[in-house]
Figure 1 (cartoon, one colour):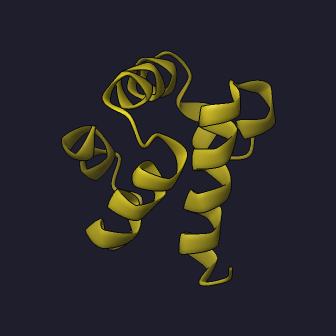
Figure 2: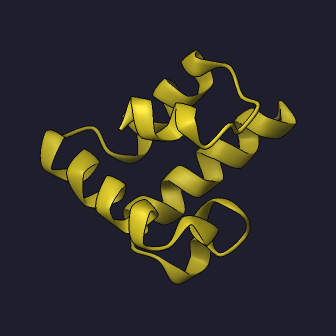
Length: 71
């Protein structure tokens, strides 16, 4: 998952990406599900997070907070 997100060139620090994944998908099966979902629909990272699963929505929210430096 980490390598996939780094390849997306999000402009975010790797620690921010790791934290967003840890919060949204704390268990290995959740990480796999999130990875499959993001691979199938990368737009979940660019505003379409509400159209995904609760895990991808949580990741999208964490991702956005990290990108904008808010909590």
